[in-house]
Length: 256
Image (cartoon, rainbow, N blue to C red; front, side, top):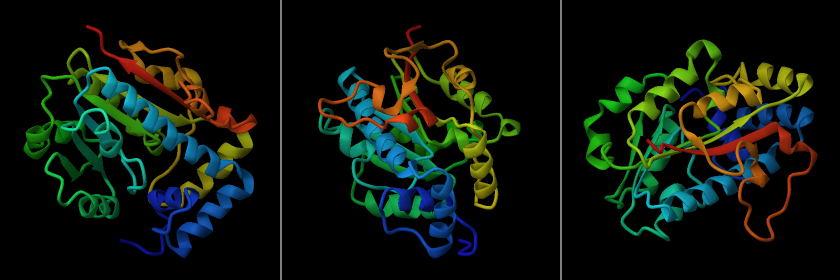
């Protein structure tokens, strides 16, 4: 772990008000906040969207979940949310960051239905070939594929659309994919690209049309690809306001 390089997962933890971050992460995060002060609000709404989407999948009959790019664990993780509805749900968390993996394993050490593995989204073949993953996730049964705030960490050259397509193709009918992804305007995008360019991973803002491609061949559930606060909000859920358009989300289902 390089203590001199900002870490995206720890920066996100800082936005959420967590304590698993260091001075270098806070300094980089403050550079983001100088141009995009609404970032913590977006981070909180992203977590809220995760919880709503996970509950929807569990209520729809999904009994196993694959969370790729999970980030540092916080309150309301996937396994905690879905087991309120499906007590025996199986959950696999994957992340490329060894710090995230270590924290996740510590959190789930006594949970025999949850695993945390170190994997890179850019190597889907390696993910699907992992025998430990396949002991927990049965790819012959519907899977809830969670890809929240991770795809924008891959550049276009790293082909995130190809990675998502490979994962989608490996899942059977009845599976769902949950995605959230940043957008942005010129000023915010330029600052974000510069700051995250000095972190452990970059940040790529993508248009609505580019994000819709992640759902190719699947049925995009209502209300479609929308702001974080617009996807089936709980009663009394607050709104993001004018900054909502900087982060989009959606849920797709494989029907055939």
